[in-house]
Length: 116
Ligand code: 5GP
Ligand code: ZN
Image 1 (cartoon, protein in one colour):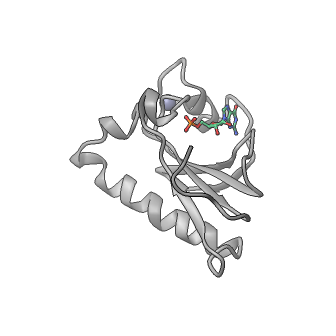
Image 2 (tube, protein in one colour; image 1 turned 30 degrees about the horizontal axis):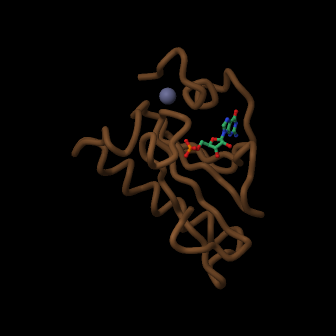
């Protein structure tokens, strides 16, 4: 399941440290090391999937659960009233830099649209 050279697989296996804000059997959520907003959390399935482009029917439960977990963390952090953003960067033009699928939960400031 894990890929030996993958940064997020190493965080998932606790080989590398991260500030974990949520963990269950299938998903881990950590604070981003380089936050771009007052709240910047990464939601990462433990299964090594390279990107959104590589998800299959088999991943539907995990990918669906991530939205529910994002919503719950947002509530816990009192982001619900003012709103927040959940982002997936997919591939080179999408701005993906770590090739293990993850979703950014961003909050605590206003975000522009369209994205840069
Ligand atoms: P991407 O650009 O692939 O959508 O997002 C990758 C994210 O991972 C970036 O926001 C980056 O700051 C974060 N990141 C990169 N290396 C580490 C690390 O070692 N620990 C943590 N917690 N986040 C990281
Ligand atoms: Zn991985």
